[in-house]
Image (cartoon, one colour):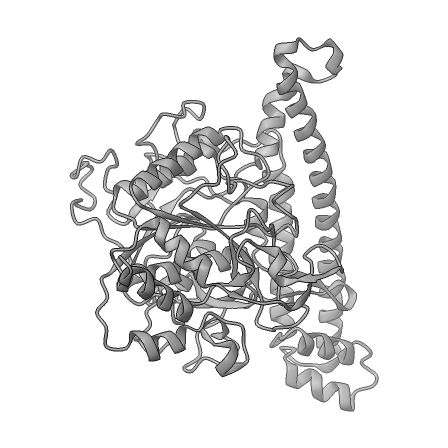
Length: 542
């Protein structure tokens, strides 16, 4: 998965380097708190800048008939056994599971639940991939290492310039990630020692909040008890054991970043068995649309359409929806070839909306992705893409997939989405969110979003990766109740109905206060209530 997408939640260093994360996986509560479902709330009724889903269903959609809409999620895979998702997952009715034949003659054998472009015919799967900059640097280094531009043939100078750019990016990124990895390893060692010491001094098997609270009041001789209690309480950890678990996971994450994502020699692609340079090749992969780590895709799918009527877990934005899983996003950077094939697969198998929460800094085969997006446009399919989590202006510092074709033309069926928070304050724009008054169409809830996680569990994550499926869910609701809307009309409705906010916010990546409305084309946050009203007006006029 792209570096911008993998940072879908934040890691913070606190006491002695203890790691705190917002992504605490747990079984769902019987009744969700308003904070856990804040994206569904309304600014006027609830004082929360959500999408007004509750109000829309209650006041505008009650009693109306909806036609189920198929939304493809191009991501890391989806847990097909999750109770909140299993009833809504797409099934290819024309394919017979496990018979080893391409029953529907679409070029993909046994694609009953979708397709995996990161798998081999033998069932193996690519879990980690190099970043695109690393792949490019490894490819170009033998040709240009040690050379000066003035000594390079004119026909090769563009490639040399790319080499210099990816080399600089690789070296900077590797240095940063190695520093983080080493710092976190040190934090894990020191905090494990603190944890062991406090547990030994208190003579208890576990260090939960209550144990530490009592110790902070009655055991002044245990010097780390009070700061540890304060840290856990501030960061919503139930126990020191949970905090250490998150820290170990962070260490593992950055170890994989250094040893796999940024390793010039690492190349898992032979597992797939395709020719990565053959951009017209299709049919490779396998039917395992869940893959080895479906955390990210499962969370996104839950945001779009987790069952709304089962009185448990979470509620997706869209009720009348089916979800198709197309696996094309590893932990690392996705390949342009896979993205293009994933889009075409989704379109050819009936997807009306495609949610894409991934991105990267380089796109060597962008023309191939552009052609797939044009194909989706011709077939009337709306694409919804996460803007990225690098706190940058993508009008001037482009990420990929980008909002424009190589020609410079805006992609008419693509919505690019930034992330907003649940407080209408200076923190309304997610501090991590990319922005751009020309390239980002609108914002959507993307901070502290509670949704599905593998194994019938739930987790809270933040990122434009969460904001994009919110918008895909809203688009699915519009298409379900107004099936005559085209992809262009869906985009028009969503952008024109976005509720503008003129709150002074910290521009992502800086402390400068700017008008929230200046961060995107619409200047607003997606709103289901207003979008339904807009769709009603638009369809009545035609």
